[in-house]
Image 1 (cartoon, rainbow, N blue to C red):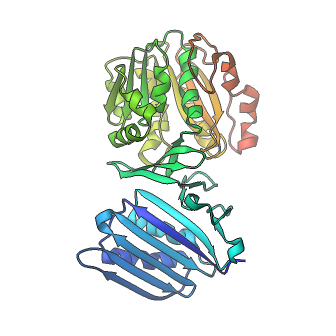
Image 2 (image 1 turned 120 degrees about the horizontal axis):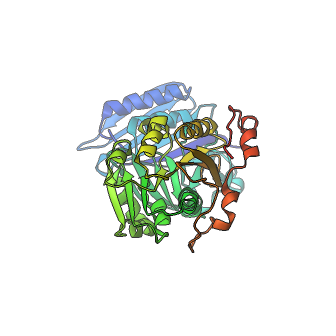
Image 3 (image 1 turned 30 degrees about the vertical axis):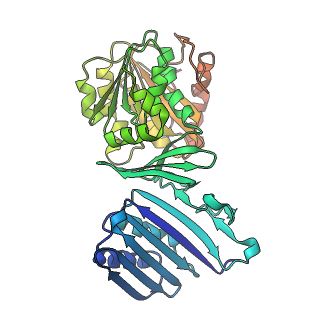
Length: 416
């Protein structure tokens, strides 16, 4: 049995690191949030820079040390009581807004023969797992499950004009891209999402020549589109150039895809740039982040109406519509909104193990062609999608009708 629990955090790309008052306020609020009893609070600013602070609590301590010249802070929370460590760390994260966070949780006072290092889900690992004791904790607000990724090596963490992003290596997963503390892709299973977003509409459309990708700054959906030799032009409508450059530095697939002469990168808000395209795409692929903040409107009816207006006659839209388990209301709303603007609509699905809920959905809207019928069978190198199994990726009508009971949400009817 452990006598205490300690969380060690490293904040990279943090802000306000030379602010003595911020440190004092953050430490005090963290103690309050954790339900701890403050005994004494000491904060000192060093010359020429750097702040250290310690909150002595009845349950143990909360300590902070900053290195402003490196954009780095170390946070140490130790408690032997019922203190809410997660709440305390959340306050420190909110105060310093790091681009990248690593954390290690240690059970203290355990006999050396049984010492463990635990992730935030409570799963124990032997303490001698060397480079796996540091973890990245995903913070996906819609998911009731908190995923923790062991970190072998941090490759880069950045703060762009719009968000924080990091690329790190994780045992068994390869390189991982996380944006605003949510995993966007891992080298291990990225192919599932990107193949199922791109290939079903490109096989259901009889003559696709041009494609527009909304989002897609990591370049992986683009790489799948470029496998189709009939595609003459692809426009990538990405808000954040910083994500594109980060992906190109760390993912070979992105570097090669964005270097293809058929590709045009358009930086800006796709809600506006979509209407300004100098061509009408045959297929639009919505490779967008979760509907949080400004990205939420990319899941709304107004945006899907814009997609329909931008498409060529007979064009098709394929949009990622989140997890059928944890985002059932989003899926339902997107399905119904797309159905109001397109003649045909269908839901495809795939299992992405690293995504919350795993069971991921993609909703296809078509101005003319039925999405569940294959009209082209080019020879492509894929790992999951195959034209001969095209209908297998379509969510069956019976399953759609059972979604209310399975997901606890209102009915989602299938057109076919």
